[in-house]
Image (tube, rainbow, N blue to C red; front, side):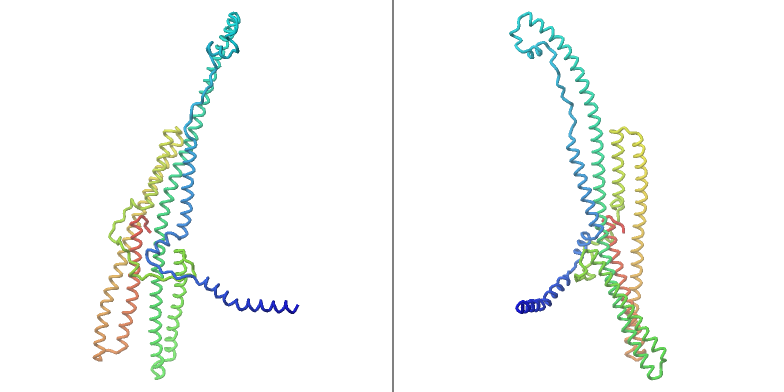
Length: 428
């Protein structure tokens, strides 16, 4: 019994020694990997892993399978053949061959047999007419049923082709939108990083001002209320920075979701310079006819027109023709509305560019003036014409302006991404 107890203690001790190793191994598996992203990699991952794109891929597979099934059913149906009629013999010679030992009969017996065979020949001829009439009726009925089945299968193939075309167009549209969402999320992350840098700058500035106020308070040149207000200002900027950092964490999490990256993975983002497009679409004209929404509307009209043509030539169904004609008219009007909506989006995109460029120009002009003023202030400081505090005010204003200008440039970079997918067929 003691040996068993001792053995159990040894096993337990060995397990305790192994436990840290097992825990460390488990922690390593949760640590994730480090992924270095490029612009091309971001576009690839977004088009592949965005949830709506994945769902559309599944729908595309179903539509393709439905088309294959309908086409196979159409092949199996084949052509309808006229039924073969097995006719009864109607000549004396044919009937004689059916009589056993006819040649061995006497002339009298042959004469009697021929009389019976002649009657049978007339009966067979009448029966043949009935069989032919029945076969013709069955053939006519069969052709009608076959034609109905073929029309149904042709309609299924037409419908499957239409659904497959729309699925492919929708997939293309969702892929472009997913790429835009990923890049937009990237620029929002960069913008938040700039906001955090700006908040840190304000903390330092407010902190320096608070220290100056405390010194003035010690010399009796500032009140306690002014000291408290200066410290509150520092705390306010710190809370703002903390809030921005939380927003950055949430934005990074969403960014990883769009790209299909595990949240545990570490992502190395490309620089803003590396995110610039290889091909510029800035001056490229947006063609409404190449927009996916316009093409989908065209496909719908063509599909309904093909159904209408089939109804006229195959079904001869006037109520169906009237209905499909109405659908063509309605879908044509809907396409006109879509085209008008797309034109408005083009105007909106151009207006957005104009506004951003105007803002950038104003900020750049202001930056030029402030930079020149800072240079002048440095000269004035060296000659004792202004104080260090006045120089710091100009320097701080220039720094804040640089943050604004940098964010404005990010907005224009995002606009360029919108223009890219608009040229490729999706107006955001």
